[in-house]
Image (tube, rainbow, N blue to C red; front, side, top):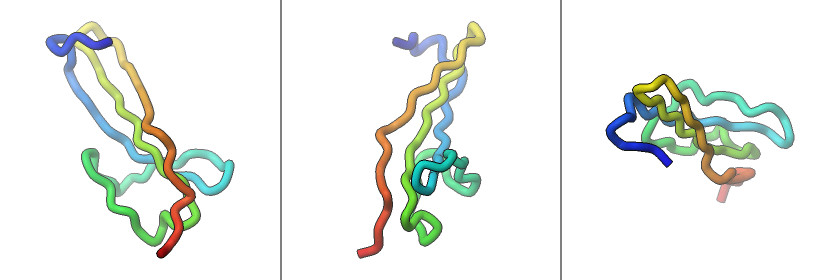
Amino acid sequence: MLDGDAIESVHIHWYRRKGNGHWQLVAIASETTYQLGSDDLGRSLMAVLTVSTSDGNVKRTNSNVIGPITAR
């Protein structure tokens, strides 16, 4: 639970991985949207929401993992 008045910043980071490898930050992704591209084929994706509060706490939660991404 977060107190809306205490939130200082909200950031969304996108990550991808191949198979059971390490998650890698998608550096070129926008915070609010991410459009799948050819680099995502065969990989899984997730978003991580990071919230910083005025008392210095940082909370993180991640989305469900989608993938592996396949071409139609």
